[in-house]
Image (cartoon, rainbow, N blue to C red; front, side, top):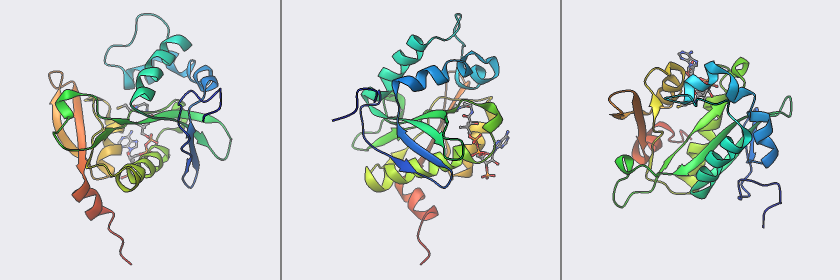
Length: 192
Ligand SMILES: CC(C)(COP(=O)(O)OP(=O)(O)OC[C@H]1O[C@@H](n2cnc3c(N)ncnc32)[C@H](O)[C@@H]1OP(=O)(O)O)[C@@H](O)C(=O)NCCC(=O)NCCS
């Protein structure tokens, strides 16, 4: 049973050194909207930014799509207590990235406040959710998809965690990344 304001409709709470990942709430959309009106932020995530200013309803409809087949979290900064972004650990829904017999997940992520980019928060979130996906959900392959080819920061994030480009899409405008369970376990093998 989830709380009435629990938009994500799951009860998973995770924690890293500096961040908390908690189920996304309805009120988090209000926090997100002003950031989604920043052209620099929008350019990072959208191939073609929407014509109209982003509204709460627009974000909610995208959120409903994500929660249907995934776990949508708010990223909360422990130091400030603020929700600073969103991330969804989502079952693969793109035909081009599915593999018969494999459990595969993707991971749309956005830190809304650009003054917080490049501080290692993205990497902290992804390390935590990759561990959850491989070790708790038993996935075979982790595949962040639709990474804009000009989003250098996002590419650096995936590559810093050992992911490689699986394919180009949309005439080279988008890249799909991946890491297999075997590669994940090799990188994260306990040394003790
Ligand atoms: C993409 C995003 C999640 C990355 O998170 P972040 O907190 O900014 O990134 P981190 O600080 O964790 O950096 C991760 C890696 O990328 C590198 N990196 C960060 N910024 C970089 C930049 N501008 N250029 C090159 N490398 C960069 C870091 O050095 C780090 O690698 P390292 O650990 O080997 O040193 C975040 O910037 C964001 O939300 N951006 C807006 C939305 C977006 O682009 N979402 C992804 C859409 S596909």
